[in-house]
Amino acid sequence: MEEISGTHLQRKRFINYWEENDFKNIKPISIIPPTDWQSTLFVNSGLIGYVKIVKEKKRLSQSLTTCQPCIKVGSNKFSLDKMMFRDGYFSFFEQLSCGGGENISIEWFIKKVWNYLLLIANLPLDKIYIGVNSFSPEIKDYWEKSGVPNKNIIFPDPKAFILNLPMENIQGSYSPFYYDRGANHPLACKRNNCNINCDCGRFLELGDIGVIFLENTRIIDHGIGLERITSIQNGLLKVTDIREFSVIVSLLENKFQMTSPHFLTIADHLRSSIILLSLKLNPGNKKKEYALRNLIRRIFWLVSRIYGFDKGKIQDIYIQAAIELNNFSPYLEIDQEIVTSEINKEILRYEKLLKNGRRILKKYFREYKSISQFSEKELKFLYETHGLPKEIIKILLMENQ
Ligand SMILES: [Zn+2]
Image 1 (cartoon, rainbow, N blue to C red):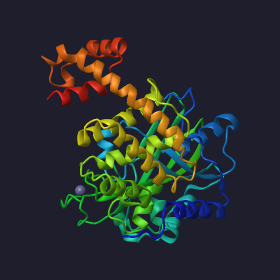
Image 2 (image 1 turned 30 degrees about the vertical axis):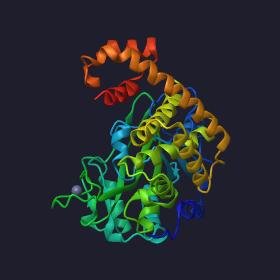
Image 3 (image 1 turned 60 degrees about the horizontal axis):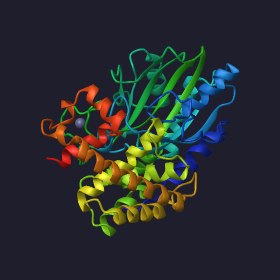
Image 4 (image 1 turned 120 degrees about the vertical axis):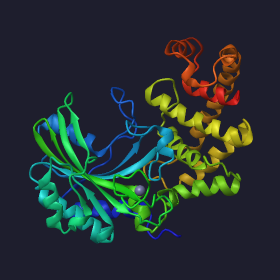
């Protein structure tokens, strides 16, 4: 189906709506976390901007809105592999976000969010489901007063998110909202008791509202996944059908004749690694640099399973995908030269690593058939002495079978 309103328009509509309600549009924070960033998850969210302001000024006097690009390569909930098999999860995604301090009433804010969903995003009322945790009965009342039918509110919702970061002095609770894609959706489990907490893909989590206490200041925060709302607004079957993603998928299917079940993963990793390289993050062996290297190497591995390790093919895929992506990236111009030169360097490193790995791991492979048979000590030794990370050992194990 042709997309009637792409991510660009969705971004604009969301920001305009909150600007009309006196929220100030601010520039998103850099997608690449600062060097002192503690999390290994490598993700930015809109909330981080507020944390900084509240820590400095002890309050949030100006309500803010932005569209925050994020990178996420796995979480407590899902590994990167598991993320790739769930519709709606990308390693690069954008979060429409807004929030305010104590001058904003929670009741008013929830009403405004509900109005946005109905009047700006034009979602049908009966398809939106909301979860509220047992600690926040007042949030349930506010949703109801805004017009949400009682049957569409799951309360108490055991999975509604509680945030508790005592070290950071941040506590709060989230009320997530979902879109019902219907019992006939290809990802729906068709069980009678399927609801927002079912693991199937019928109910797509669109976003949430959070009431958060930062250093005793109350913040209200709201986020919506840009790719998710765009897919729903356009009546698309899956989130991966949005244009800026499906152009890469089509490229892999049509130009490179890929039929691998992994082409969605390849498309995802191409998108995020090209964006990170264009932001001048170089692949490396630690934290965020390693996360990027790992994304690139996963592409090498998956492409190799189709064509064998064909350097020319990998280069060509990167070049073509970067050209496609350039039409969609609002934050930066895709730097073809940097992408090509860094990928070429990574190809050489990867080749060398595989060659060494095959030699070094030969004796282990006589006995070991899976990664779980390696002890922590052996994995540490292989990484520290021979530079062989777990991911490469896994690849060589598979090659050996
Ligand atoms: Zn289900």
